[in-house]
Image 1: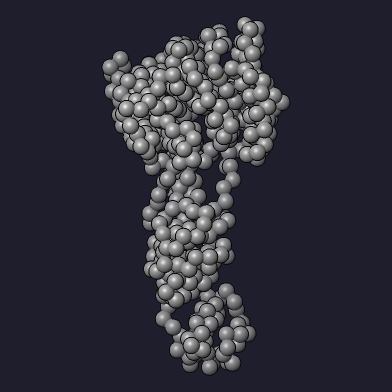
Image 2: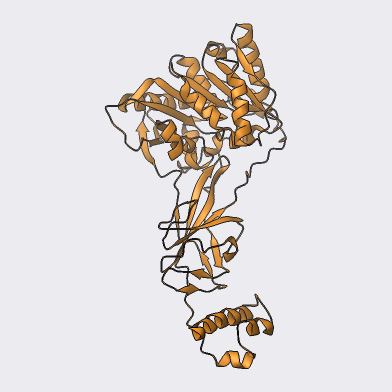
Length: 454
């Protein structure tokens, strides 16, 4: 047994010398060997490569899909509680926790299994600084100026690749020891729990003749004999790419409602249409600063009605939400069909304030950033008009977008305590795109939405 320990310690020491991670003869002596010559005469155990495969685990946050963790598969069941953050290195990532698991999935506790799950820190990557305004763009069709979103989005799908190195000792339950190595292992698989429950379909619209891809999430135990709330989400124009899946990964406006904890509270069907670049090229933008009803709005509204008709939807609990383009579309649809939505969460958006007057008695939660040069002044005007028409608007001091969950809960309560149908919230500073990187993380607003009935 002593000889085995000497061999194990020797292997560590020699590996360190060769790899340059320890660096002097004292290391070998500390391993129980008096000289380097003696060390070279002791038979070292065979090198066993530990990591067999790296699977990246992608999670959709407010700023888009990111690699939240890595699952490292080993040949044997790992010893629970034996892993440490310093046992691994991942290029460009900060490891915050390491656990064992029996499958390549996120975990917050040690489960016996052959996987080491490395959890990574996440920091919102969207700048909250003021953005320079773009000069008005001349519309070649009618000569009017505006600041519409760019016609085509060049956003690319998230890169979920990883490069992992084992830098410490990893122990298996059967006694196998996997020693440190400079061998870097690239990820060869990926799992995406945030989007796993969504299915992609295509809708053909009789009115326009165009086809529209969309994603649908059905509750885990969907029952055709039961009625479910419907959450209808439309993304901003950055999701208008050639890949329909962008609507799910550009931010968490669609996926947050499918989180298991959220579904446990608010079981619902989720509909997320994808207004692709092909549709932009064929039908033009879904919404523009001219605030006109477009063929794109006809298409997306017809899709909504089709899903409501074909699935077990509680028509008293249809909830609309969206950011920028998606919020504008929500307002336009609600203007035209005022009895459709039970409530709406409108994020970083605006519309013709005259048309919006029909929403004065609707259940709305509006969220904009002070630095949003379009949505902020427009929603200030809209809410002021509603108040002049007799609507009560719940207002508070501007919110700190970096508040903790508990602080957000208190801010939500402060707003709800005013008992108004329309809640108007403004983030301090920020900018247009920053707004939705935070908006859907606020649990209290999500809870408010599902508490509303038509």
